[in-house]
Length: 518
Image (tube, rainbow, N blue to C red):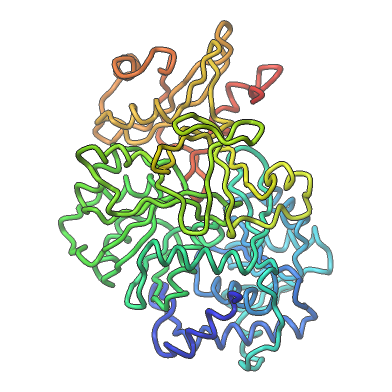
């Protein structure tokens, strides 16, 4: 099966059911399929053929699904672009991918024009919303002038459907090639893990250019669910819409969950919410305990990355146990989902005994085909069919995976390996701490030393000295921060991951070797 079959099937089975809802606007499954067909015919009329790339630069919108659908059914690999990036950052991505068409939402049309100049006459620039400014086509005009007949496009399950940019937490984003077969199986597995039924109603706030945001929505669409769409995360709006639309599922990252718990939740009827999927960043254990105590055992954790397509492991609601012998599994990211194999390996790729810390490796039908136009990097990342994630972890006797930290985030202080997440868990357990990140900074004797960057809760009162003492009461001293810096917020990727590279940069820029070599 290929992803284009999803739109066709839903139009046949649920023609009048709302497929996507954004504010006051909505589109049924039949309308969505017709719009997708018209867009494919319009792109053909402009000379595009299967295999030509199309890019989209937009916040979450109904039109985003037109582009996704046209790419999936028309055989155009889709490159979703991060609208938060600068023109210079985006230029490097599009010059590598060389899309034939770029769909841009009105706030990003000027950026689209700059990107079009970089690519010359080969790029068709299309305004997603509103009219067609000078030098641009209009999506509405393209759709109105074309037939909604099913296109005759031959697509192979092994064809690339997405060119997903990696998050760039440790360096320059790359484009991971994901194929139809893998994404179809990933969506099926997500639907299984989330126990989705056509009666579910999903609230999507994660950006659609992110692999996790797209994957969760695709799983719901595969099951014929209605998806309510927000173009950004606003905790108050999320709570309101869960109650208003009787939403049954949603997806968060840890920071979102923390903001939700600060809302006046008792003022709303949230009883319809049966499942919350969380992923993309490490979940502080204390935050998770608070969330379960408030919402109940409705949480599912997923672990993976862009290159793994993305799902690799899951921790079910039944495994979110607060008390007893099984409570320790809350700090795991679950076990490998069906069809996926996970190992903990050493630097040579040899599997380590259970309990030992090594690099997490994934063998999966969802794994990327490779990095677009970067065969050497692909060869470094995927070895003998196993994706080397760069995440350090361990596995217990029952196969539960515990992420220790990113390999590149590990701090080596006086010859000792310090995993920042261990200290971050302690910091999050303090009542005054809202968010925390621990990084390695230069030290004249130890080489590196841990430094904590902390966001206090609005009513939090804690000093640097008190917080360091709090950590030293709970951890070996070499694992504790030697300094604490308080900030109003932490820099994050759109998927919620803390940009530790950005936090480290000011401390290492004056050092000849800059950031330490791992």
